Length: 272
DNA sequence: AGTGCGACCCGAACGC
DNA sequence: TGCGTTCGGGTCGCAC
Image (cartoon, rainbow, N blue to C red; front, side, top):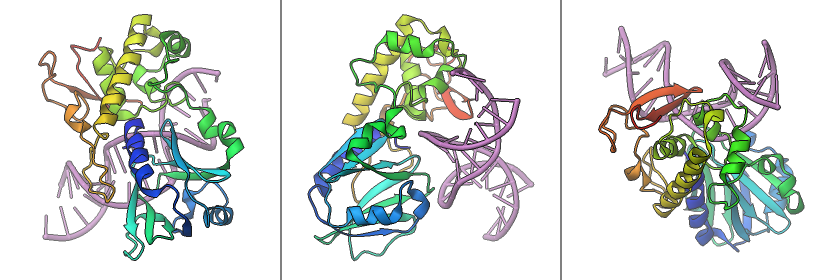
C-alpha cells in the first residue's frame, strides 16, 4: 500500500535510473489506466525524456519537456526496470521503452492505479493536484490549520486523517501509527481534538514519515522487485497488523476494529 | 456541505 | 483436496 513514504522511495529510486534517457516506444496494455487521451500520450512520450520526478502527496509526477505525467499507485502499483527483451508479465500494464534497451514497466495487480498527462502550466490547476492538503513535512502545517479543518467534523479522526484534502500523504498504515504515537483514540470525532492533540498529530506524522522514508517505506506484502524497493519500516510498526499482540507501551492487547470500512488497529488503554 | 456506502479490481485467505 | 465466498484498501461518484 504505497503511502507518501513509499511513493517517495519509488521516486528516489527511479530518479537514479530513468532520467534523461530517450523514450523509444510506449505500449499500453490496459487503457482504463489513463484519464487522458491515449494517442496523445504516446505521441508526446515518444522521442521525449524524463527530466525529473516530483511528488505531491501520493502522486508521482514525471517531468517531460512540456508536460507532466502524473501517476498514482493506489493500492498495488509498482514500477520495474527491465531489459526490453524480457517477456511481458501478467499485470504489466504500461511499458515505456528507452533507446538504451531498458524498459520502465508499470505493474498493478488490481488495476487501481491511474495515469494522466497534463501540460506543465496546468499542473497546479489539475484537480487531483490542486486539492491535495498540506503534507506533514510542510512547515506551514500547524495546529491552527488542523483545528480549522477539523471544525464541525463529526467523522472519526481516523477517517479524517485519510482525507488527502486535509493532510496529504497518510494512508491506512500511517494513520494508525500516527494516532497511536499521539495517544488519540481513532474513533474520536475530529472536532473534539484540542490544540495540543493537533500539534501532537503534526509532530508524530512528520517524524513517522521521515523515519519511514529513511527506511525505504513499509513492505507489508512482501515482494521482490528489480528496483529493490523493499522497505524496512514494517519492523517499526507499533499497532498496524498487530491485533492481539501486546502494546509496546502498556502491554494491553492491540485491538482491531472497523472505522469507515477500514481496518483500524489501536490500544484501548493508551489512546484516549 | 457533510456523510455513508458501493464500485472499481484480483489474489489471498478463509470456510466448508 | 477443491471449490465458492469474503476481504482488503485509495479514491471516486452517487444518494441522502
